[in-house]
Amino acid sequence: MFLSRPPRDSLTETELTFSGGGHSRPLTVRRSAQAKRMRLAVDPRDGAVRLTLPRRAALKPALLWAEGQRAWIEQVLAKLPVSAPIGPGTQVPLEGALLTIDWQPAGSRTVRRDGDRLIVGGPEEMVAGRVLRWLRAEAARTLEAETRAVALRAGVTIGRVRIGDPRTRWGSCSSSGDIAYSWRLILMPPAVREATVVHEVAHRLHMHHGPEFHQAVEQLLGRAPKTERAWLKAHGAAVQRVGR
Image 1: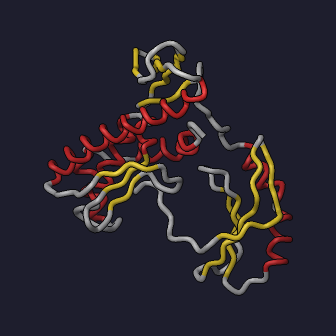
Image 2: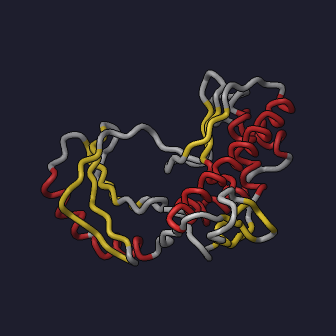
Image 3: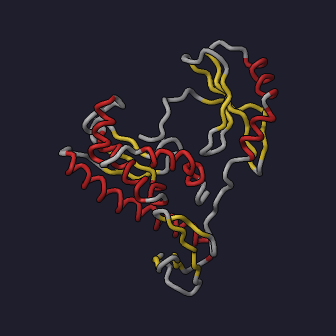
């Protein structure tokens, strides 16, 4: 998977709040048995401000330290992409292209694509929901077909192909062969989606990220996915904000 993180301990929200660039986020505290020192981070995908502490670290001095980092945190928040709600006249990315939402109140409520437009009718307040459902359906159809095609080339079996909306990863593969994706892959250029599909199918050959796994990815993809990883790093946060 391109973006993943280990299981987290429960997070505790504090009274500290940080603001920047139109974003306002409370500080949440996570205690971890693996943490050796305090660590402060801003998640570029959702703007969450998190303070990680060793299990037995005192909270009060940690909060004072976090307050002392306010200027840095608010600078990071100010650089985050703004939310990109969906509505009449707005644009949504689809496979690397930008489509304009063409709302026709008296038209069909079934979303359809016409060139660089997504046409949808019905009440204005229903436009966002209908477009998002259409995008998810496109993602489900496309990812199902592409995953099974790559699995056939790799000579492996897969179970269910599921679509969700996780904030911490673009795809995952279980030991039973089920593969899950973020529907937001349909918003990205096809090459990025392809690299993600190959990455997850390759886990049916190697359930780790060792050299054999990366070799399998390159063989199935026909290249090293360096460009696709760079695209995700540069644009992944903006993709996560579409429709929010």
